Length: 481
Image (cartoon, rainbow, N blue to C red):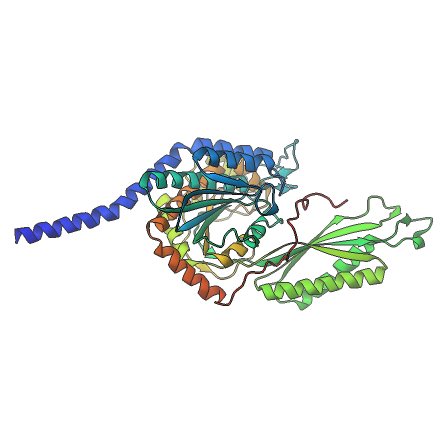
């Protein structure tokens, strides 16, 4: 009886040790990341200061690549025809787990790290989507997991994809098209946010396109009849598209900006350009909407006796949720916890929250975690969508911004330049790292995630990029003329 009891207790102790061991490993990873928080904060703030636009992120990508090389990763630069794109790899064999790292800024959102509108005099750009934190946080996670793999002897491959020009350039699409994700078992990613959440959800498919009208210049007073206004072509097209809005489904989103117009009112403009974004949650409908918008451009050119051409800049798939990976991410986010403000950070948050509707919100919300759920609908668009159709993918958000802040705002730029942004970044880095540990320890998680992907996309799926075979638009953030 005593011998049987001894063996029972021994088995229970072994089971208890096996369960406790991963937790101790995870706590060690969290501790290691905490020790490196200042280093990664400095990196993120340096990229925030540079604020480089899509496909022009030369300094930002080199900083991230240097850190990865220093940590022992093999880094391949300039992949898929994009000079600032890269793939960093550690280990070999299966499973293959991928992280994503973005690092491009946005034009026209220059802002100092203060809780009131104040442009930076030295630049017109700003990290209003927090990609300086995105890229740095993913690198932090990758280095932590690499160190753990080295110490534990676990087998598998860890990759970090440096993905430029998310803001309209669609860098990830060219990497998917090149087959760089074909052997990946799971992609774990994140994005800056005003809350902490591992909610897994969809997004809108999108096609972005520039329409260029060419006419004939003339003196607008002396001989206007000799001119053919390219700007008239743009305005006629926009008018027809606006009429079309009554006759599209409710989920449709169409936006445009006239990126080239007239420079002087007394000259009939010979060139004009308008930049369109067309979105829907169904890729088939996005393609048909694109066809209809092209028809309006041709009609506008005919009516104004101008010529029109168009260039598809990019096209994103809608994102496929993955509940299997999402739940893993949520479990680890709950373990890591949210963002705790210092008194100084709380004062910053309270002041910035007076600049937008924030009723029933508190700076304390940055410390909370949203309940897990699967959202089948979403209204943003991202080139992560293409990745999610070829390999199981999940994302999380971390409170890098003050609660209630929206992306692409001066408030987002401001918080990202303070200590608040990097605190949220480290929440994401820890969660990404711990989630990779779970999959490396139990590759069946990736197998279940792959089965969920097959069910969502269908078994006869073949990837074809919405942007066709065009080359990366390396100059898309530069004016056409």
